[in-house]
Image (cartoon, rainbow, N blue to C red; front, side, top):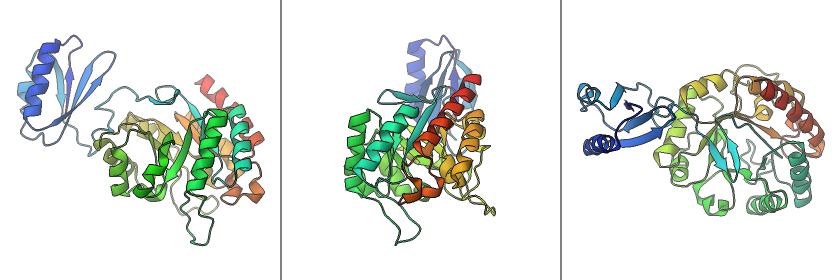
Length: 332
């Protein structure tokens, strides 16, 4: 349920209303917009008399929400959420480029990519230290050593870092990480999401391979219910019957998620297609659809990459994509 207050609602009356609602054993999410204040009521609201609340002179409207996701719902929070990542803002008209290798392979490799990606327009550096792979024989990442190298790249370039967590027990290793990524395979690892909900770090939540948008938003709800509202949604392609691309990029998810939720939405065209030459057109389409950012895999030698080389761009190719995307953003 949401309660929309009048623009000039008296503070004393507002506090009295909130105190009364709290006595009804519901939590209150307050969203102060430019033109109105919205109180989002979370919990059992079945016993709350909506007619009584609506009769108050400070109340403009009372609405019940049918969607199971509450905190992530735009009805609770009409204005776009803007997440500040060490000075890099995403959401609310702030577009970001996230770039870097699928997997951290060496200090020389990572630093070379990081410097060139920043020069080309990247604001955040991505890199995998813990790698969930379909095959147990594939490269699993450098793990803790990879995190140390990411921190070195952060120190050298000043770019905040984004990297994936696979298990809640690894969380102490992520103190210096700026954005914790939850991969597609862990989107419904609810115990992990609960732990991340108790942190204050931004969480980049990737859509599962066969997950609906509502399921993605419910996973975001798990994190937000724990108190962490800094969630970034990521569309990274879904599994369909198509075989020419690694996955199928659901471009329609961008405007739909932004209609349903106030959270920032980024797109990963690298995993969505699995084909390097498809990354640019899908990046342009995602930007045109209203995405708040792109997450692109960049490698200085894709042919010799230990992970996902076929979908990785060279730094020069990434620079071309970034330049073209900026034109789309400017046009919009």
